Length: 293
Ligand SMILES: [Zn+2]
Image (cartoon, rainbow, N blue to C red):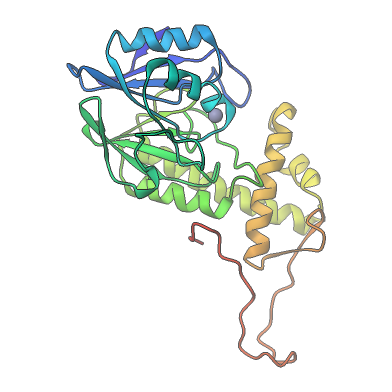
């Protein structure tokens, strides 16, 4: 069943609802009105009825390109088969997914298809290979799992990276979009406010994680039990991945210490003493792959 979200964008909801995917994955069929071809974003899970519904939403127009925001199963499982079925190239940031004729998304140059331009916005964080797509004609962005239509997303340690995620949220905010087409949940019409809200939420969670450690919680599970006490326990395993992503970032920044990666304590404040001989060296940091602290 396809639903029109704008003159250029139709949404086909995949039949895979869950606490993490909300009502299911949003597959988008995108084209300028009057164009003879369309772009399909995130074909979704392997499901024949869903694939047929997406073909139906293309309404006889050629599929010029299939794009993936990232390669988690709920977005990408059915992508290769769908691209093969409609004879379109498949493009993704993830190594080994793009097929012949697909544009290089990492370059960030606008992709012309379906009578419009989509600019890839590499946005690592939720997953290392995550990419949003900006539809300049609408000041809109297809956000995959970077920003959802409702609630917050999971930064899945170890594939996700919290420092990258925050930098990617700032990148999205700085594009000043007016609307977001998320991978799950409804259209977001207060785009910048939503992204600001996500940034504030992550800063709050980080402060809560630090406070939990200061109270004596040591393991990610203990931190989750305290910080996510108000959240459905069914989501606690996913929350633990986000907490681990926060902890990895804090360890990198020298604000949290760990011996084995399972037990964490607040780092002792570093004093500017010169006892160890290596005067003036700052705490060691490993820069995240995408930079941005
Ligand atoms: Zn998803």
